[in-house]
Image (cartoon, rainbow, N blue to C red; front, side):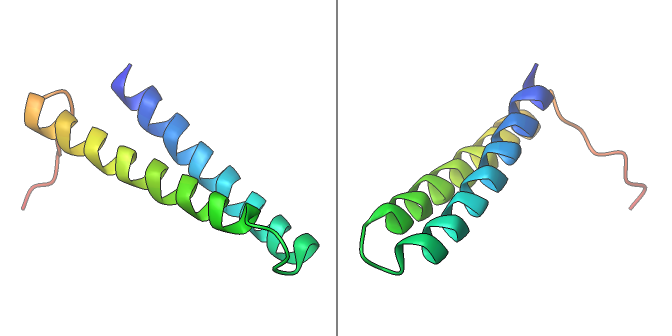
Length: 67
């Protein structure tokens, strides 16, 4: 469940990235949609990092690295 939520947040971040690119090209700086897309992208990235940190803290996510 946690891994699915992380993947969905990462996909939403990529969608927000491309929507920001679309607004940059289409609006040419006349509207605030690019700024809103940036805000959404930063919020999604923060939520993703918080969810990953919570997963490691709770033990639901583990690393299998030998080092």
